[in-house]
Length: 233
Image (tube, rainbow, N blue to C red; front, side):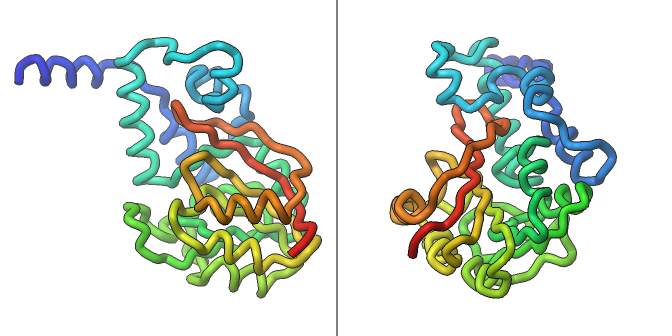
């Protein structure tokens, strides 16, 4: 027990990047969202997409197991308070080009709020179903619409769709993709452990990826933003 307490005390003294504080400042509008390079510079190289670090030959956390445990705990806290993804200015630059953005599966609405601070016209929505997460739906967006993604894209067929970390093992993301019109565009943040296989197969078959945007990712995560257009049903 003494050894366990000593280890926990050591972790509490370990310098952990203030990711939550930074993103909450962006949510409040106290500070502009950082660019990707600053996120990596201030928080550390672990916040680069893990696959890119792997391909460059950097396999282990630069500061060892103690920092790795601290970053894992940080991710759990971040999810509880905000959501699964970390945005950056380059992602918002892309979203700002649209006349209207419909965010589906918006969760707490923190990204909806950040977009509004950027002057982006956005409608946030979430079906508010219980996926076993602790997210407080609409916590940052009093205007959040309670609706399925497929309903929202049918209501706004000309809007740019934004979706981040669609639920693993659920069908709503695939249904939403199918409901989109040919020619409609989407910006979606995907990771290896989100959305079901059939949704990803439909996305790969029916959408053309125009480009990707690097965004910060928690340790061992492979978050990346895809900018795509629907080409076929």
